Image (cartoon, rainbow, N blue to C red; front, side):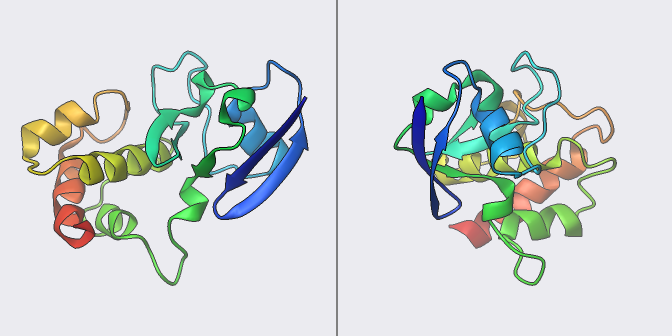
Length: 153
């Protein structure tokens, strides 16, 4: 089947199998490997991207469901010379260790900040419940989200 979607501002029309997952379309067809596959069961959040402005776990979305949609991946939010405020805050707060969860964590955190008026430490922890990190203990991740939030408003 043919799927047409806009990814990071560029339109793509692709032939994919009907059972192709969005994460596989991004990684295998478009070579956007910043979106990670961690668990294959939608439990870890490493594959989180924005679908029409809202965070989704791309391993639980069929490419066909994204037909006509606008997708933003970690590659689409900043550049090495001009980091997104959330990326900069993760760097400044040392909110990563191995970095495997970081792209999905950042994409979820951006949506959390954009959809919340008043964030505190508890709200950030609850808002990121669907993203697992096995290295950091989340303290610095929460610090990073709270640091980036005022810059994003």
